[in-house]
Image (tube, rainbow, N blue to C red; front, side):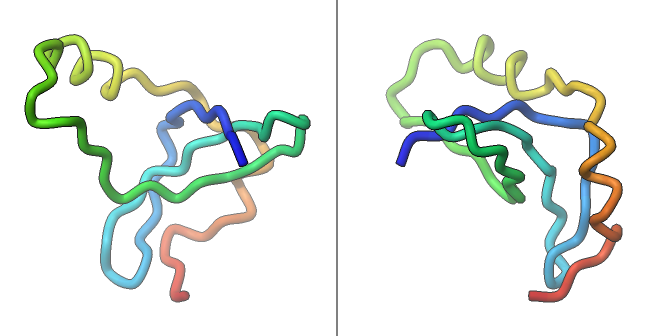
Length: 74
């Protein structure tokens, strides 16, 4: 499965761990919500500054994300 996601400004807590909600789609167009707690890059990557700038970019979440409470227990 391949998905493409964008970071949003909405965060929640999953079992005590902060998670940012990312929204996106699968290659076939199915909408997905991803709860991301960490993102890492290869330790040999030379474009760390570029990665950090891109990681800080966030869009406004869609109305569909309003269904998620600020605390989730899985």
